[in-house]
Length: 242
Picture 1 (tube, rainbow, N blue to C red):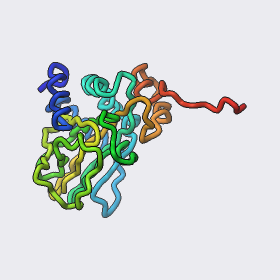
Picture 2 (tube, helix red, strand yellow; picture 1 turned 180 degrees about the vertical axis):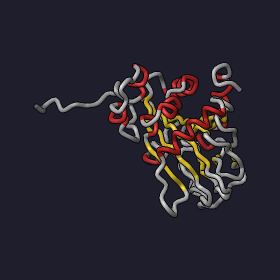
Picture 3 (cartoon, rainbow, N blue to C red; picture 1 turned 120 degrees about the vertical axis):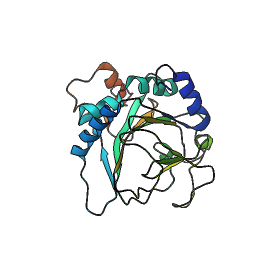
Picture 4 (tube, rainbow, N blue to C red; picture 1 turned 90 degrees about the vertical axis):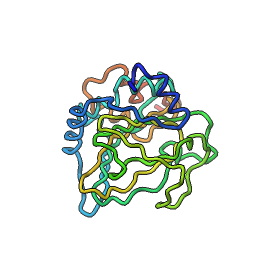
């Protein structure tokens, strides 16, 4: 499956299941380089088994390229409109001994009182910088859960019968849409597992992070990046102020 030539099939897969793993969107060498760039930015704390690094797209070109990957942008824009914005970009590394996460939905859905809208407010791209396997904390997903209008309420360690594990080679990307139910599985291996999660929103939604501030950290943003980072979003002004 090719992210450009098979775009219609990818969107159909995503519409039916709520997600689609697209293999080898970037080469393994590119994934390794992005992983090395991330490692230099990470701040791991003793005793923690998960390391989250926020706003990575403005901190290294290799990671910025993931946010603006043309094939991924095209597919996200077909769902959310050409004026969509990036809501957040966070790298997540599951360290050895990580015991998994609770089932959840991503922003903006966890900030909304159910029932959720029946049309997509958000879509996501999870870049696999390491192989995602059954054993190392690959993402668990419940297919078709994006059609449900409420968040999951399972116990943290519950594994539903219809749940699947989204495995893939490094360089693949997991595309997902809407309030899909998912979790990070435990990583009992001796090796960390890293990914970069990019969230995209419709232009009228409030981003999860201050994207306009992050844009100011880029010295050469393109016109498309200015749109993506929210510079074209409507912002109300105090007309009665000075």
